[in-house]
Length: 158
Ligand SMILES: [Zn+2]
Image (cartoon, rainbow, N blue to C red):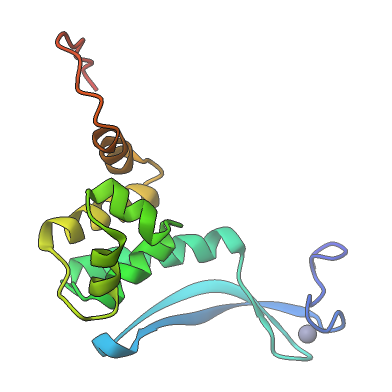
């Protein structure tokens, strides 16, 4: 069905890959939350390895974060999951949110509950990423530069 390389299992190099729907699950044990999503995938008939397109995996990660946000899972564990999905180091996130890395660490390890405004800012960055833009992150980055602002603005209707 598929061409050379594409139709062979990457793990055993042998089995034929079959298109099917797989359920991927993300578990947040400390928050007692499991998020599941059905995705198109290829399963090896020989070794049972499941292959999911890398780009799709990234989208699943971001979509899971948005689901957590919508469900109100505002735990440090969820925050950490979102930060990872955004590819941000704790120090980078701290800079964007005008916080110390220690604060982020305290939230993520459950020593303190995440601040709601900070949590929503991270949710907005995740939603942006899922929608293919970086509006919130760009705004936070600009604020983090502490460079002031222009006094005449040309407004674009969008
Ligand atoms: Zn295989």
